[in-house]
Image 1 (cartoon, rainbow, N blue to C red):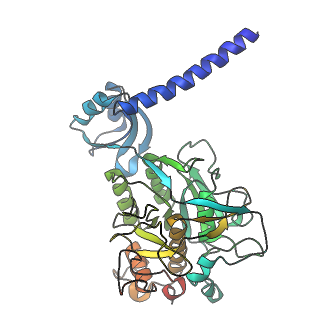
Image 2: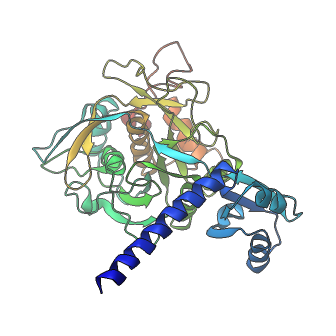
Image 3: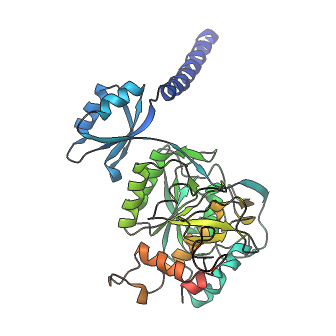
Length: 393
C-alpha cells in the first residue's frame, strides 16, 4: 500500500514540475500566455476551432475587448494564429504588480485615529455635512480585501477572484486591504477611518499573495466592474508595458461611466500603465510636507497628487500596517471621487445629462486641487494635491 501511495505522490510531483517546465519553456520560445483579440463577427465555436488548430489552450474569455487569454506552446503557434484574417492582433499577457514600496510596520486594533493622509485631503471636513459616500460603489482591483476585518467588513458588499474564480476574493497579501481602508475604513471607535467611510467596497482580486498577476486577470477584473455597475475603480498596480488590450479595457470602463483611478508608479521615472493612459486619473505621491515622494513616478500623464508616504491603514486578517507608495496615493483620490459622486453635478454637467461622468469628476477634482510645485500644472503633482472638501463644495 505504501508503494502505491509513494508512486501517486511521485506522479503528482512530476506533473507539477512538468507543468512548470513546459510553461517556462513556452515563454523562452515566445509562447506562453497571450491575449488574442478577434475581429467582430466570429462566434465562440469558430474561435475554439482556430485556437485548437494551432495547439492553443484557452483559459479565459475577455468579452469586454472581444478577446481570449490563450496559452501557446511556442512562437510558431502564435504566428500561425496571428496570420489568420479573423485575428485582429495578439498581445503579450504581461505581469502587473502592486505598487507599494514596503511594509513599514504592522499592528493590531487600537483606538481610532484619523490617518494624516485623510486629514491632508480634508475628507474629515466633508462628513459632518452628511456626505459619507453612502452606497457609492468602489471596486478595489488588487489583491482582494480582508473579508472579516472589523474596520472594513460592514462596507464590503461582494467581490470576485479573476485568478481562480472558484476561490475566495479574500486578501492573502495585505495590499488590497490597505488600499480599501484608505478609501472606506469605517468611522467607528477603533483602527482608522477612510476618506469615504460609508462607500460600498467590492473586492476584485486580480493579484496573488505575492502582489503580482497577469494583465488578462486585470482586464477580467475591469470587465466584472463594468458588469456590476462600479462607479469608481482603484488600480494601485502597474506595468511598464503599454499593451493595447489594457488600453481598450480602460477606454471601455470610462465609456461605461466608471471613474478609473490608478497609481503613477514607484520608479522615480516614467508613469506606468494603466495610469499613463489619458482615460485614467493618474496619481503621484506626496509626503506630509507636501513634497513629492522621492520614489514617485512623474511626467505629463500625472493628473493629481495625494498622500503616499507612511500611510497607516487596514491590512490582511484584522491587522493594520504602515505602507508607502503611489499605491497609497491613488485610493485617496478614489475616496474623494466617491464623495464627489454623492453630490449634485451642478455647473460641472458639461453634457447636461444630470449625472457625473468620469471626465466631469476628473475636471472637478483637478479644478479644486491645491496647487503644489510650479504654478499650475507640472509633471510632479499634475494639477495639485486632491482636496475632498473643496471638490464637494
